[in-house]
Length: 437
Ligand SMILES: Cc1cc2nc3c(=O)[nH]c(=O)nc-3n(C[C@H](O)[C@H](O)[C@H](O)COP(=O)(O)OP(=O)(O)OC[C@H]3O[C@@H](n4cnc5c(N)ncnc54)[C@H](O)[C@@H]3O)c2cc1C
Image 1 (cartoon, protein in one colour):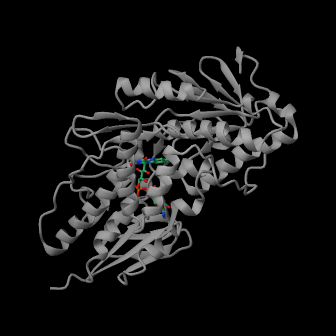
Image 2 (tube, helix red, strand yellow):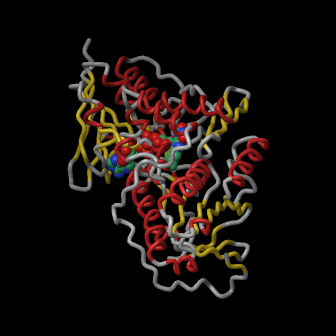
């Protein structure tokens, strides 16, 4: 019996790709994949693009190429603005309507600035390939400008502030410290690169909050050794064009604030007309469907997916990839008149690379803690498996990662798009502030 099923999937991230890959195996299923980009972006390595370790093309993969061999998959470029969940239809900003027998939303997240004044205008989020390229331009831009005019050092030209002490902030701070120590000192011989300072700020009292106490000590030790200054237990209260203020009265003069402070659901979640929970994400049932709407599934970062401990699964690439494939299996079960199954997540653990030569991982049901080369091997295994979800050849990735971890070679790619032209006009920090850095 032929299913003759047409599924609309919004979003070609880990969740969307996981879903389409599973559906594409069935000739009697037709898939329309809609994304605002015609490529998948491999977010775990965006900080490597921002710090010139990788070229953008190394972490962006063509969606059309990915499904080139699947005649039952159509890739459509479009920004979805409207969702008609009951009719399994979406409409893009240019008026295109795509309707099917089932709908899967997998539109990911967006940065959450937590209403911090000036953050949306002046900080650099790190969520997309565009973000990573803008940030890279800004980092290179401040070095180029300070090299031409060393007086800019007094304006904090080489101060970098990373907001958020989760994996994104920690990985970014570690990689930036390596980039400055290994490459900028060599490339900018006339500049007092030793004036560069990296600050990491987090409201929590530790970095890498979800990890164990000994992991907190390890990351603080590694970043401290790299010269990163930690401001913990303190909020960022304002981001200006040339400074950041903290709740303890500190002002840091800087033209480069990296925002790794949190994520929330994209606006599309609000357009779906379904219940939104924590972070604005759409609440789904254990089988990843939305209660009361037949043939409507939400997966990956965009969903609050219940976990057996009564909480929800974290926003991770492996959760996204697995939930996408699981929703596809449940959609097929719907079409075959079979029972759906509750999502079962195979936990790969949590991990972070803290710059070159240092990594931390907590793996297994008892969260066994690993450091150094062993942690890196766990990191490599998980990220290679994530990458194989979106790309067939991963040997170049494995080779690059091994070189990156073990070699002392600095960044190989130094280009500048000019996207971050810097306005150095005076930006007096607020007078009420006591300490200036
Ligand atoms: C900097 C960074 C580092 C990370 N590091 C790790 C890590 O080391 N390990 C790990 O497991 N996880 C990591 N994560 C988390 C992981 O990347 C996410 O959990 C995962 O990407 C979520 O997958 P997704 O498919 O739900 O969303 P996404 O990967 O964000 O994909 C969403 C897709 O939807 C598209 N889209 C969005 N809105 C629309 C719209 N309106 N119309 C059309 N298309 C739209 C986007 O273009 C995108 O292609 C990291 C995240 C970030 C930001």
